[in-house]
Image (tube, rainbow, N blue to C red; front, side, top):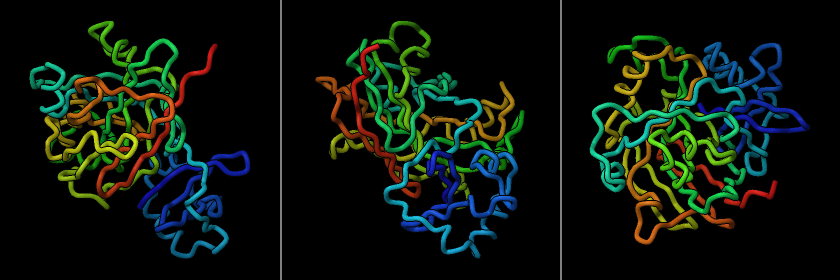
Length: 288
């Protein structure tokens, strides 16, 4: 199942994607939760699947032209892995890590599919990073290799827009990873049952103005889905609605010679087979 959120008549609605249509779950009000976040937290995907089989014709909307929002508006923790592909670590001059490089993203840094990524006024070094993002369902603490996949609700796409000079101002990456409007998520969440176990073997790409800049496979992740969940849940309780970005492969703009940074007017696309494509334009920040 593919779940998304969209804006209509001044409000936020939840929907299920079927082909080139979206089934508006507003028509199930009173029978199903009103938001994708509540569908995740209440674990009612089976109920949604049952309802859409008999959804009224009026609930079906064309996907094209919908104003998409973040897949759900109230994510919990947004946890990100850095250096999770060996080739990307190498292109940045890093050794292959024995423990994941971790950082967090704040809500104001996040945007939806179709919304513009914002190059800040203080830097011209905004870079793209194509990533697979995990959506936590049941969550838990001290997960094991055997049970950790029970914690996964599904997966979406992420463009971890990074302001490279600010990322390097400190040994911590928080500043460079949290500029407003730089992290794109979406366009929808694909439930885990629709993808290979632990999202293995999925091709991942980034295209800039139609040119392939990154091309790899989730099989190459150093810390795969299982290992990531076990490692993180040793530290913290993973809760329904948490997001985990699983790192980017090689080919980022900062490592190219000469470097390639995002500029106003660019279009950047993240693709992962079996999930879809996340497309965003780039604009310059407006003056304060």
